[in-house]
Length: 341
Ligand code: CP3
Picture 1 (cartoon, rainbow, N blue to C red):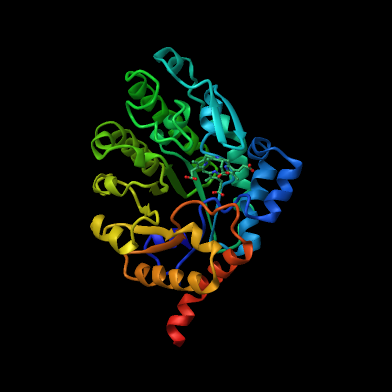
Picture 2: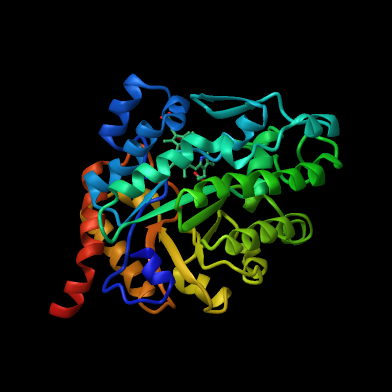
């Protein structure tokens, strides 16, 4: 349905999925995690496929997103990766040119588990649903690799502990890394690909335009040559939208909840399908609050070139699944409400 929307075919209603839908807010996911480690799940195709399909089975989303993590490429490049209570950690932080040179550029074949998981998911995907592949955008991956995230606003160009020459060298290596990671998923059958630039908001518009946008744009154009549709999500990055607007090849811009869809659309010149942008905290509130916000966003979405309903950021682990179901049902039925009211 999302591919239909992007390719300009009629969908009848607004499709919906949630960033981080395959995660801890689902009891079924927590049950899997009692038995298996997170990385073990990512690296075992049957488990990754099961976790990918879980939110569709329980909540009837219109798209699945591959169960994996944006940090897996850094792990395959040779860093030590662990998930702690305070968030993920990549060690030791990349701090010199020599460190950058020592990192591998994993071939697409090294993402075998993700590729197998994609094939398994596609074989079991209900009709009309899409599978979304993903990776980090290079700056966000660099932020984790140089010790800038999480939580601290210390990962911007020049602000990490690494000397300045590390930044362009690592950015350039990550271009090849991310393209290979994406190719593994595309070769296995992924048709829609989301680039997560979660930390882009750390950058000034000038830093973004000079040292981050060109590499990101090259990745996007490589993905387009491979035939996938591209969703770009830059969080807390309203100040960068003037540049994002000029990146060729983006099909969908994913909007955070900091501004309305109408504001995003005006800023972006009306030329993109938008994805978003319910504040994830609304799913912790009352039904009345949820209804009001969902209906407001659907109404705004109806005026865009196209709208994919999503959250402004990942679904919170403390979201009651019943509230998520209520939201999905309301979005699914919005078309009927419009006709019969
Ligand atoms: O459901 C999905 O969206 C599919 C899979 C997915 C995961 N991570 C699984 C995951 C996706 C698309 C991601 C992207 C990701 N990972 C991002 C970008 C999106 C965003 O949030 O801005 C980032 C920054 C990461 C890095 C990461 N991985 C963090 C910060 C954490 C810990 C905090 C958290 O939200 O859980 C992870 C771990 C992680 N990635 C889990 C899952 C299901 C939880 C692991 C567990 O079971 O403990």
